[in-house]
Length: 338
Image 1: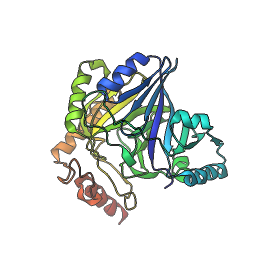
Image 2: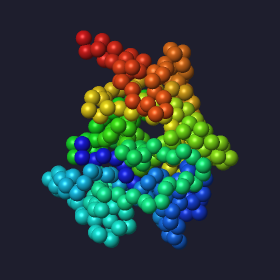
Image 3: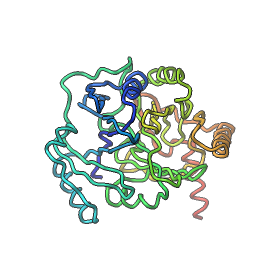
Image 4: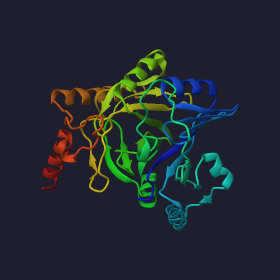
């Protein structure tokens, strides 16, 4: 795989003041630079991870994907060119603005601006979170993950898998269609949710401590209208999380405890027990979708679906065949193939 992680994101908002408060007091990022038109946040030792710019349109502006070095960047640029993708080399001024050694810029089939870079700058000062948290699970895993909404998953999957090298982790077909993709040990750095329109569903940032997550949920509860999905736990990546509507109009998932995978041996599969094991009441779903998701959670509870005890903080690795839901899926696949 050429890409190694989601290295940074650039967002737009019509309310910088709200983002300054939301990004620090709720999410816990460090606000390191503030101008009349932008905010720059840190999540770790990198000089910047999230940049929010003032704009009349509140939405994502760019996704910065990382590669190992200049040679990998050149190789990717050549592959994009071979596949008919218009690629622009980032100027020295743009690289300085992004705090990287070099980058290229292009668009995916939906028009999303993608930037691929190498050589991120490391800060001289230690990370100082906006609220008292242990930190974020980043490093080689990147910022977290992005889930994009699409009219048809088939419109984007070939580009991301065949050209950019993303690998399918797993997929859900009910109560909605969503496909998850990885480029490192994080279960997914990117996913596509089929909604009939192109856009963004959410970004995920992972806390290092369950208590950091819980205290963030307490902060979010002070603004009930901001909560998009209640506290719960996902089936496929084991993430305990909640979602809030950010000042850019989409959702940010605050998570903890996501499982790691081995990218070399992981095999994609359908997840049939539901997107969540418990919790995660989704305010954004229509009533029939919420009811279907609720039924799937109750069914998993009746059958006693549980995660292996090995999945603990500091030990995120888990063998695929250790999960009860995965074993059940493989059993059904074997029966179906015979």
